Amino acid sequence: MVKALDLTGEKFNRLTVIKRVKNDKWGSARWLCECECGNEAIVRTNDLRRGHTKSCGCYNMEKVIERCPDTSRHMQSNTKLYASWVSMKDRCYNKNNKSYLDYGGRGIKICDEWLIPDNFFNWALNNGYSEELTIDRVNVNGNYEPNNCRWISMKRQIRNRRNTLKVEYQGKFITLGELSEKTNIPYATLHWRYKQGFSTDRLVEPVNPHKKYEKRNIKVK
Image (tube, rainbow, N blue to C red; front, top):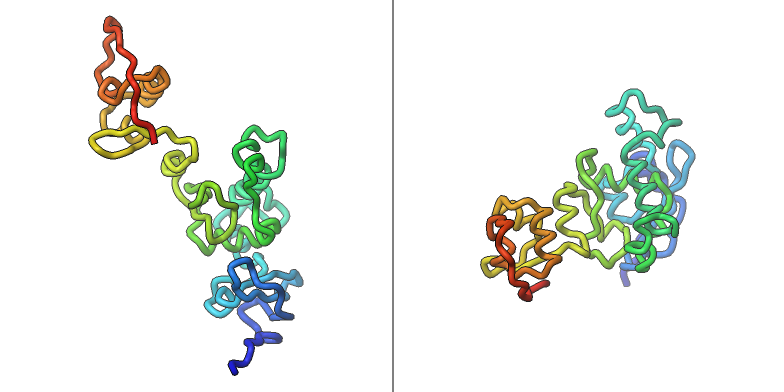
């Protein structure tokens, strides 16, 4: 019989394992750890052993501060990463947020781990975060959690949105943004034509204010 893994008392970077806690919903073992700074954190086995998680989040915040010399530990709210966490939380839980209906209103939540900002910072800085990127959910109907999130450009983010309009062009379904790039027709023009019900071939015709367009159905994905 295989002996159950016990990391109690072991130290990994700044973290000392206190005890095992409930597995995450994917069945991965998790451990309650005490950081050298005095804070506690819940960390997966693989993240401890592979060094993905080195602290409660203080290590990565120090790195943020190094990149932004005028930001101190007491000014975390001034960092772009912190603003990203606040925005994410607001979309999911603040009914007065203009985007709530597309997030919290659809049942989109933030995993328990990320409700603690330091845990979110820790994941972000170990998974490709930079100030030029924005957080994106791989499954647009899924929650904000490590296995469903990544950092991508805003341009790519817009293309991945749940309500991005797509049309069939040259045998493939592409977004209006991509169609604009391929045809050099302004996105605003394409969007107006789409809303008017123009067929794909009419969408990409040169603008002719004297021509009366015939409305046809277009294939939408």
